[in-house]
Image (cartoon, rainbow, N blue to C red; front, top):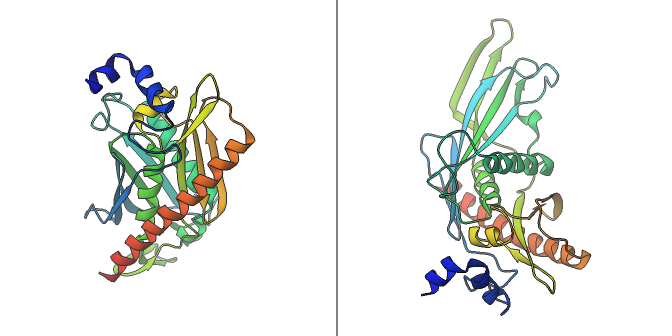
Length: 281
């Protein structure tokens, strides 16, 4: 009967829970879902990870390529991120070209990563104006149950944390390139940026902020994605993006930043613990 009531009266069903200061899945308004992380999930990639945040599941694989740096940035390498939201992950997505939402998610992940400055593209350059690494970071959502940007950032940073680059020698006279896959060095990272999504639910009395919203909660709050995303990198605020939703007070903003900062510490600890165990193997 509960599922039927939810299907027929989705807004009333949601209001009944919110009015009792609880969410449909039993969480408090500022409570996040559990996180499960598995590294090296794809053996054909240089580094990979799969993360499960509640029922949202995203897998990331990183592949490498050598290329010539851009003429305007001769000392920089390349980092290319891509997020795919396949019909497999949600009935909202159809086969064919990437949807607008998929492009927004992909651009958001890229912006948060670049703004965090956790990777210096100069570290990817091998020989100035001649040779540089290209890091292709492909993320595929297997199950989209909300807060997909959070999951993408978590699996991306976990993959980058375990990535090591092969040694490359370049002969400037003959343009001969030699790659030694047996001698590697870890990718240098400055921190681990963690994104936290929030949904803003408008009620006659006030606007309620929900941390780590599910897909159902995102829909009830006016869209198919989160209304606001906050990104912290080891205690430094490195990104805030808002996508619609109602207005909230400065006090609520401060509370959201606090919740996101605390969550970033938890996710960072999960990534570090898993990566340390992986390196011991």
